[in-house]
Length: 397
Image (cartoon, rainbow, N blue to C red):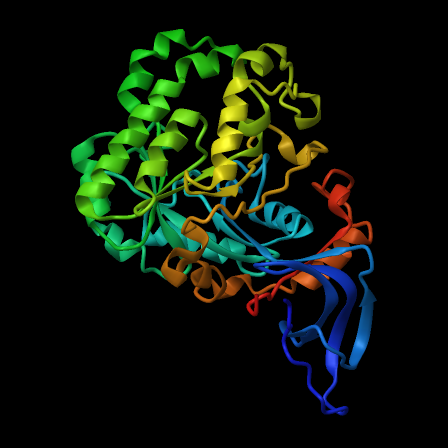
């Protein structure tokens, strides 16, 4: 039974805002009740109180603000596709109030100086709380323990397959050194570099259909198996990013004490062999939505919670995406695992506490966007979820 949080009985003690009559999503139930806000904090849920302002939420769903633990905002180096301002503005509109941004920018975020540059770029420009990953390299492998402690850092990100610049940890000896340096959960892009090189001749320039042939299921499975073995050997927790195959989920399910993982929506609904041949341009609303047997197996494993899948994410990375009317919504799927967003109770806190430069007024951002502000993501797509009200400071949940 929902008992709520007590509301002040002192009549003169007004709340700043009451969200009235909404469907409030709590950890163990969804209830129709009122949410009282004082300052930037939820002060009470349920009961009867007085507030200076009232927002009628009848028929709306009230959710705690989402932390998206993997975004690519492409700044610096590719701001024609996305930047810290436009990406965070889109996040807020979709109910995401905290983001962890990835290090494969140009230059890469792999040094204290590069991290400081990103934090400076974000100051007074990003609309939500934020932290930045440090990318592991052969040059900083033994210093990852120091780097993960820097203010504004979400943790360490490992690319086992080629990415941007020097962001590559392909050998087990180097990967073990990274895992032995530090204590926080390590985020891993698991693709086997040797297999990618072996199959490079299968890649056809300009032919998107060759992508899943070159970077096939086996390349992901091999890398996931390797990192899980080393995580077990070193006792280091890992988070496997954007899992694409049911085989990986089945493997990860046997290591849930040290491993968590995530999925992306397209891997639940789209099959590469069906979609890539039909893509003339990477527009989300033109893609085939054929669901094959592989997608059904992934969906079943994710829903079971046995694989430790703790979030579903999406990430725009298409050329010219800022000028397109594409819709993306990232959200966390609570599958019972220990997500990187709340890693030992510290990682999520760092996104709001350590990255203090991200203390923008999200309510102001949401209001300006909903009132017709122009720019990326403002015209359609994201507003399809306009029946949802997101409350940023949901620490009482």
